[in-house]
Length: 455
Image (cartoon, rainbow, N blue to C red; front, side):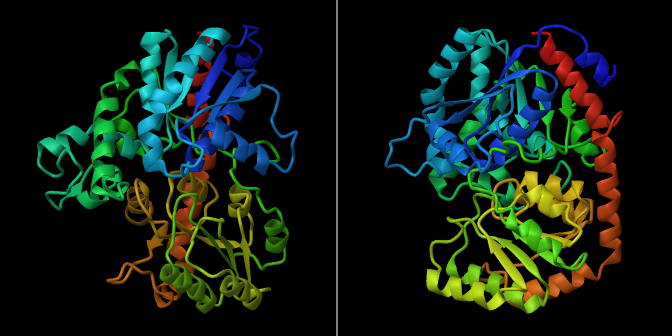
């Protein structure tokens, strides 16, 4: 079936609700998918929490960026106005009670037949029973992590972790890529014992609902996760998803476009791009070592420092640092990441290894310097360093700090490693082929479109 045949079918396109978990790394890929579906004529109701809805609208530089076909809706998240709405741990517990009833009302009122729900909102699968809607799950992490999620009860049964997420046995966990038991996403995500317990309980409870999903959509591609996808025969890998230029991206902060002009002035393959996503937080020591390490590397650098990246650095010190590196380094609040990664000036990507960033780095053929923070990021680092071999791990000292010397040494090592650069280009070519006409991800996107057209 060709793309043209689908678009010319003449059948009325169904109304699809898209439901992301209320965090930046979840909203962006689901917005990218929404754009792809809107291109096929689908009507999309994109549902954010009220808090994130206002952030997205505030961040938009082009107020006309919401395309025809995408309707932005918002409902409460169940938290009080004085609460920290960015505290993922607090959010998780209250979302089902706050959101299920309003979602049911929207679905009934608008006669919506399909919901694409973030896997981290998999409690929404209950809607299949209450309002009869059909649901496809969207993975905001790798196919490998989803396979690991489904294996969690077995890990408890085998005594590797307990039901509260405490690690009882140090062991390398399969499926590919192998990770240490301490790096199981729902264990490393829990900042306290209670958070770990809640995480594990949520996974086990919602795992029981997974059979209600009619499709599992993955932001990955067949060639890059062959072993993991073999464990998920019904999955539809449609990635890597691409950010549309000058359209709504779902960013919580305004993108600083001036960094693209700055990159234009840099020599090809010289710039270190440094971005740690939307949730990573550094203390003063880690932050200053990173700042000093970038200077010590002797390379031009573009560093994304969002407003809540650290609360421990004095503004005066930071302003002096920015003045000191002016010309050699540029610090911005938020960047148009895919446009940065595709820029000829970028030499490597220092990253927390969130799945979006990982897929974007692969798509644009950029070698990685890996510094994971929590959750699935350790698994993604293992893919980069041990399986695809397109990057190096930044190793922390006994105090948990990546020193300036370590940063300098790894930059030198990475940028001198021609084999890593060659593999990065090889994976880029495979990624581009997968989303191109006739590629594996493109074919799966057409399958998804056909499925959603069934209404």
